[in-house]
Figure 1 (cartoon, rainbow, N blue to C red):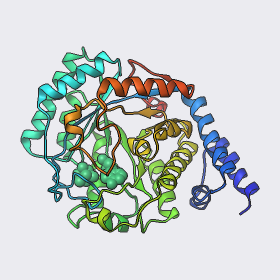
Figure 2 (spheres, rainbow, N blue to C red):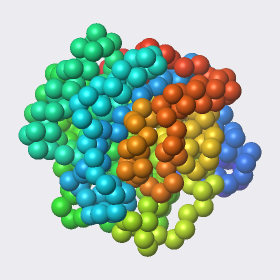
Figure 3 (cartoon, rainbow, N blue to C red):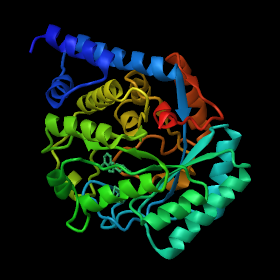
Figure 4 (cartoon, rainbow, N blue to C red):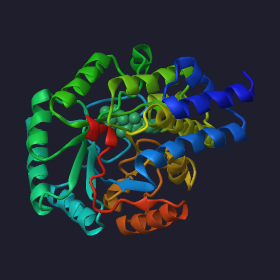
Length: 362
Ligand code: 5AD
Ligand code: SF4
């Protein structure tokens, strides 16, 4: 396909927000800088039209790295014994929530390894109630704590959480089986996404991409899957090697620049087909390049999750090698982020929950 034809696919999608699998594959395979810029600019124009030059922040609290799952790619998988395990105390979590209030972030994310013991479910429920009280019901709360029963999701919703992120990781069931042990069921994950809707959350999902054995058409189908699922928000990012994992130990080296470009293309294409959802510019982009998260915003993302966790725990929360910001405290994160967001002409949506228009229209 020549450049003119590719260019017209972008023009058409900017107008009608529709792309089929073949067209998405063509866009993901773009190599020319000129076409890449055209793609990113089209996505950014949609973001400006739907959302404005506004970035929403979610203060990220990494509450613990103890996980019952053993995903082949992830640094905090239960089979990795090369790290110390922690679970924040309730006071430590509340302290992070206070920081979010002080920084006027408007909303926080509690993220951590997947645990489903009755004690853990109670602990989260009680913590949610206390965060709500502490903030006079002002702070928005997103959870990202893996697969749970419908009842647990409902209890956490009643206690004050209103958004939930659960990545499908890959929409191709065969690939899912390759990335996970046999006990991790693709169908169960789909069920969990369904439970989240039934429990009235704003539902977020996402994928990991750019690993060996995956094709452009897998990635295109991932984006079409997210559209079909009609998600309100997406967090997705390129695979990055963690050497203490079965997948990382055997994976051919990855080119950072290529992974970053792929990450930006995926964001841009998603923005073309889902104009009014929240899309996160994830930390993994920052790991690939110092201005990676800002590049994500300019390719159509509108959410950033600055880390509020105490630096003493950050080393133990490495899902992939060379995670950035390990030594940077929450105040430094905030100052650096504010500067760099302003430098690209965007404003921070301080003090707001920042729900997607997609959700508001539901
Ligand atoms: N590279 C990129 N993303 C990863 N995740 C876990 N391990 C890696 C990795 N090595 C992502 C998964 C998971 C989220 C918490 O982090 O998509 O859902
Ligand atoms: Fe646990 Fe999530 Fe890592 Fe899988 S990806 S091992 S569920 S933290």
